[in-house]
Amino acid sequence: MNKNLVLIINNESLLKSISGAFVEKDFTVFPFYHFEDVPDYLFSMENLFIWEIGEIDPRNLKWVDFLKEQKTIKFILIDFINDAFLMSLIHADTTPQELYEKSYKLRDLINMSEMVFDSDYSFVNLSSYLKLNSFIFSHEIKEGENYLEEAEIVITDFLKKNNLAAGIKDLDLFFLALGEVVENFIEYQLIRLNKTPSIIIEYGYDNEKIIISVRDDLGKANFLPLFKSFIRKTSVQKKIQEEVSQNENKRNKDNIPDDYNKEGIYIGAQGRGMSIIKQGVHRLISIVKKESEKEISKRTQFIFIVYLDKRELEDNSSVNMLVFF
Image (tube, rainbow, N blue to C red; front, side, top):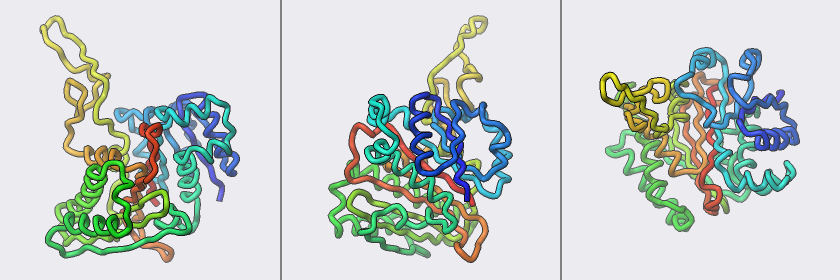
């Protein structure tokens, strides 16, 4: 299978360096500074799109209607421009191979990209994200009185037995992220589908990271709401247009999207949960399999990774993957 990658980063040195790292791993890269520069024919191929998230305008998603009809939809959203450590490596003329070795976010980005093109669907398996000497466990929750409490008990016990809790920078945020993921599954199944919730929690670790997966066997999630939740900003720059004739401040609709108040803070009914999750974890992988096949069953699956040795210099960047197949 050809590994065709559309890379969109509005930074010349970063675009060049990341492209070079992918080319060395046998990807065919189509690099662009802006989404508007991507030609139509690239959307007709089963390509992987990697986007610098600041380049995505949540007010202009007309192209999503086209993508919703495609057999596969594969995105990885990055925030590399805000990564001071990675940018310092690039400015020091670090080679692509050295970048791969020194930045585990770039390493993860490339490894996740390779998994997307793997015909064995390795990206659904926790073992694919862990080193060889790792441990993976599983727990099914169904017909319980308190799903969230049971999930927290299971993961708390897992962390204690393996002496992992001390390695998590913010344990409260970690469990807040776990709670948001579990609640999303339970709410969707109980309220929207009117069925008794059932989820499977898988969890594991190696010497550098903890990984947790929550999934069902339904594959009912829709692309557009999930994608919007990935790109939604909790706030936008405040730009208020003064209307002198009415002697009051009014929203400038060209600058502040719907669901944001006049201060630019998001107040919409949905989507804040994803922001909470992303604050509590370092990688987030969302997977939706709509049709059951011999190789893999239907599912909606959220996988998140927390590093035990996360460096403060890398706090401001992320790698988030969204795959519909």
